[in-house]
Length: 438
Image 1 (cartoon, rainbow, N blue to C red):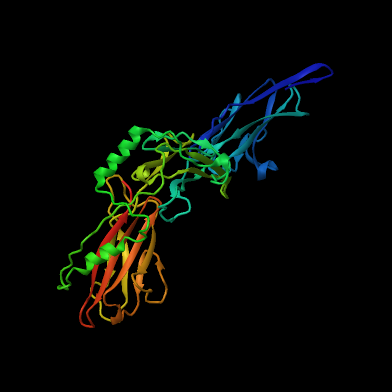
Image 2 (cartoon, rainbow, N blue to C red):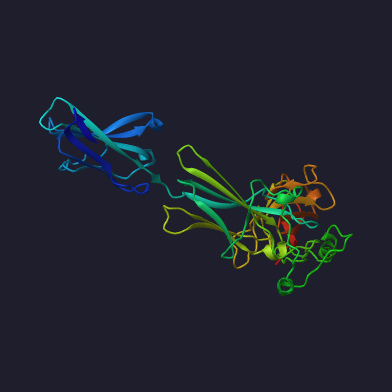
């Protein structure tokens, strides 16, 4: 600013602010106001814009008349030689420090203290926050295994606590996935967003998938008129002699079934993304990856969601391994129960492959009583645990089936309940039938 009166130069005052890069929350930053003048310094005042810019709060002042400085910041700033610049130090910046800052400089013209001239400069402090959490979940979970038609499968990556919103992307087995953006969820009834397999099947991939299947073991495919694989296992179980109540020798019968639909080994991946501001000013981001699931090839596949953010020195990630349930581990409490006791049979875990730490997506558990209704008269019971209250002697020899399934496969476990009377224990025999894919 250059000031004239009657074309006579009174004085000049130049105010500027040093540029400021984005600041990571928790860091300490110094705001610097530079000024040049040939007048006499009167005062310097710093303001922070608050209430969305509708008001200003004075955070630092310097008054040459009293040769004093005042600050309402948490840290008392040591006054420096305020000839060419003024600085304000903000220790451990927080989200509420984000916003506009102004530096006002007042001077007297040369040789006069009657009129004070004021000029100002401003700068915006941008506080950035790294993501607090990242997780991957399966949409519409738990969900059953589809034996007769291809189904869409969606992974949802949820990132919270970041400012600004991070860049989110997916990888499969460490390789970046090429995706097609979509504004709405894929719908099989709409051609524009339909998730369909590509028709160009690669023979080498087909041979590779078949070799993997053969390595896993002999495959058994159900005939079209077969709706339940239990009859065979029940015949085998009826031949066993229940002679001992102290030693349990379970026999596991495993059969595997592949879907009765042809699927490509090269699916189309669709990507959907949305974000919203939450109460503390940070962003919640949800990214969705949708494709037509192929249980034969997607089982044991490692999917990861990764985010890039300016407050991170390296990408942040969460990963899951798609796994079909197999080899359920059942637990019965109490281990020795009398007639009239409450028996609890629950699934404690599964047999896992070398690359999996848990079954994902979460299985859907269904309990049924073979040849009859449940103890309470219902046809089935949903949940990880089956509770039989006040076990009567009439349940002696009853067979219970636990079906654990997710979109990648299904496994049936049969448990026979033997009640020997009030003084004897309840003895359990288990066999297993699995429908899953390697």
